[in-house]
Every structure is written in structure tokens, then in C-alpha cells.
Amino acid sequence: MTLIERLRQRAAQRDAAHTRRNRHVQSQRRGMLAECDGKSLINFSSNDYLGFAQHPDVIAAFQQSAARDGVGSAGSALVTGHFAVHRELELQAAALFGYEAALFTGSGYLANLGILQSLLDDASVCVQDKYNHACLLDGARFSGATLKRYPHADMVQAEARCAEANTDTLFLASDGVFSMDGDAADLPVLHAIAQRYHATLMIDDAHGVGVLGATGLGSLQAAGLQAADVPILVLPAGKALGGQGALIFAQRDIIQHLLETARPYLFSTAPAPAMAAALTASLHLLETQTQYHAALLDNIHHFRRRAVTAGLPILDSHTAIQPLMAGDNASALRWSEQLCDAGFWVSAIRPPTVPQGKSRLRITLTALHTEKQIDALVDALSQITEKDDGRH
Image 1: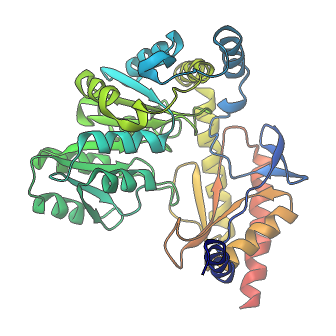
Image 2 (image 1 turned 60 degrees about the vertical axis):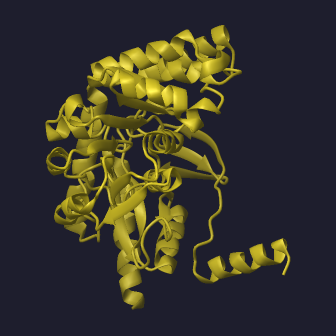
């Protein structure tokens, strides 16, 4: 069988399982209104939780830096790619989140791969939640460390995995907010476990920063933890900060080790200077303009009140991620298509992103949504799910 024949066979298998994936073309956006595949849709699939991807201050910072510094960095960070705006972003971010130092890298995936590959080896053990993002799991696997996974949110089993580890280098790594269920990790308990077993606690707060905490600084703030309690924090910038790349926070010794040895950082062209400038503006907004965080929280509460009253099968999430369970792949796809016909962009999430039998619609809320848009979505979801119940 040729390569193309094998690929076509696998594509046919994905067709039969309703797991084929296709890209949608977004040609324009105005707030949460998107022109997608030629249709005007209200976007409830965006991770731009605070609306910063479209904020005038962030756009202006990007444009001004691009005009001054050019488009690309034209080199890796250790060759010629590290600009003054990169340094400014790292210094500002470290100060805001209370860490000694920060490192700006190309993406959250590259950040987590780089950290785990650089700090772990085949004598190490990495304990992780089974629902962690793929980059944390892949990073542990690629490092050669022994990966021990515990059932989602099961703190008893998390401790058991740490207790049975026989190593001088033990990592306990978790998402702050889980990207498909929207629930928050129990960081105080994870911190206590790490302390008991002398583990390095590492948190990826992609979906927590901008959402959780009194002022939106994320999972650590919400849990009452400090930088000293979580030695390594990763902040991917493509969600609430509205940009690209990721910031790694840690002590200076760790950051210095990463910038000298983390292969995804060493051998990648540095992120565009303009993106660093844009993220600096986003962090300033996060710190000083609290109305965006407040608006997001209001929208989350409003959606949940309406959804619970309507009897929709949502999970117990109090973050911007609101999963609506469909169960099988075909139902999730059908609901997503029917919502598209009704004027809403809501993505169907299916295996392998989620376990078999747990396909869902992944609804995301932002500060830019209006109550009218949320009410219209809940009404449409009620009609679709009631119609689907009638089919069975």
C-alpha cells in the first residue's frame, strides 16, 4: 500500500467515526461578529477572553513596533533576534506576576516542550493530570522522563503517584484551567503535595490568566498562592492576552538555564518584536483596566444562569470555557452545524481532543459578548437540544 493509499484509508476511517477536521476561513471580525466561510456569525469559539486581540492600544503598539523594528526578528534570540521590546516585555511580565525573571518564547506548546526537555531526563519522574494539555504530556514524553498520570482532578491519586516516585527530580505539572472541561485545578492541594514530596510544581495557566483571580491575574491569584509556591508558571499569550507566544516565569537560575539549553527556544526564530510590544500593551491593560475582567465575569454568570434555567447539559465550569455535552461525535457535529445555520460559531470538540463518548460543544465567553447575544445563543441551544431529544 502506498503512502497516499494509507492516508486515504485513514481519512475514510475518520469520516466513518465523524472525526474529520477542516479549517474555516475567517475573513473579517468586528468584536464577536465574524465573517466565516462567507457567513456572518456570532463567535462563541474564540479564546480572546478579554477582547485584547482587537483592542486599539494593543493594535497601535504592534503597528508602532513593526514600523520601527520591522516585521520579523530575523534571528534566534541568542543570535540577533532579541530586541529591546522583548526585554521590556519580560521585565514587565515578571514584575506583574511576582517572579524573578521571565522568558518570551514562540508558543505555549514550544514553552512546555522546552521546559520539560531541558529540566528532565530519563532518571526523572513527571506526574500529570490525565486531562492536561497535549504539550505538557508531549514534553514529558519527549524528555525521556517517566510519565505518571492520575485520573482527572483526583488529588488522592496525584499524591499516590508522587509517593511512589523514586527519583531526585520529581515534577508535578498541571493546567491551571483545563482547556476542554473549563474546571480549575486544585492548586492549594497540588502545592501541598509538591511540598511533601519535594516536587517542582509547574502550572500552565493558558485559560486562567485574564479569567480567574480578583484582578484577573489567574489561577495562582485565585488560589491565594505566590510565585514562591509555584516555581514554574507558563502563560501562553494566545488567549486572554490576545497575541501569540508564551511567557515562562521562574527564578533567574531556571530562566538562564532554559535560554541556554531549551532546544525549542535555542533553535527557533525569536517572536516578532511587534508581538512583544503588543503583549506589553495587553499586560498594561490587564493590570490597569479592570473593566474587561469584570465584563467577562458578568457574561460567564449570565450564561450559566440562563443555561441552568434552560436545562442545558453544561459542565460545572465557572470559567470562560463552558462545555455543553453531546456525547457522541455525530450529535456534536450536528449541533455545531445547526448553530451555524442559526448564526453562531460554536466548535464541536471530538476525540482525540476529548475521551471517547465525551464529545461536546466548547462554548467560550468573552468580555465583548453582549447579553443579547448570549440570550440568543441559549435560546438556539435549547431548541436544538430539545429537537435532538425528540429524535431519540
